[in-house]
Image 1: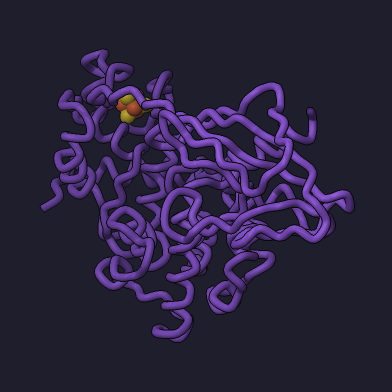
Image 2 (image 1 turned 180 degrees about the vertical axis):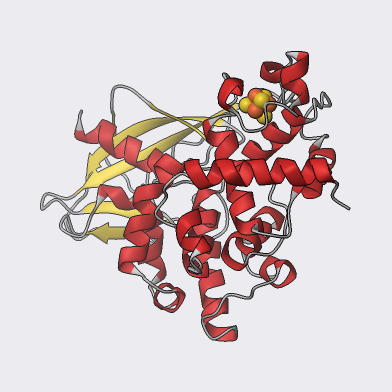
Length: 351
Ligand code: SF4
């Protein structure tokens, strides 16, 4: 049962949110919400999937492009896969885009285009894990679910001066967050804690002097706020190596591949290439006098760093290697490539 202190605390936070809510293209602000406007669950879902592992600043333009092109979940469900993957290019974590399409099609086909409104039902949809289900249930449907992202973890660790390191402390932090979640305005409250973490209780320099939680905050009282949350040190990432082959025909057409659905960059357009390993095998897609470009492409994925060497050769007229795509120069958009492939493109263009 929530006690009076907890109730005051969430009320203080909601008051602060009423005055300081960030404006975001997918958000219905507290004023409109008080007037009865509810957010479109499609926009909440789309923003939450895009925001997994990505910053608000990086997501804004993608969100606007997606919702301009596909304004409803039914429109997105009907979109060809390659168009959606192309619009997603550059946002990273491409399994999210594949699951986005799967989820849109399930909602369109099995739910008549209306997102289910409970945590459990949302959790059953493709690409929706516990965090995203709680966020959609709270923000779109005003359910008192506990939303625990990195911002909320930081606020809870500091508010309660919890020194146990992440990720082991997650269950404790979740319990603390759950104890504060109010039954009135839970959607606004979920966004209020996230906004507090993003704008006031920031990782390196929390602005405790203007924080609505400064009085009850235990880390502030103890002077430990910038040490929290503690994190178990991560293992250093290994480095892998690879080769990429860029071949262009005299008329400008380029040789590309659609990567297999399963695996890294699954379903995305890219340059043909070798495996990515300690000792990649240099196996160009056809025999030619391949020339190596000066420089290399460096990119970091979640679990490893990648260094790519780039090779180029003219693509003979009439040659169309098995399983590869020869794309007319007018049909080629560098923006359709995932970031690592775009880096290779940019190195080649600027050679
Ligand atoms: S008082 Fe400081 S450390 Fe505590 S919640 Fe507020 S900003 Fe974070």
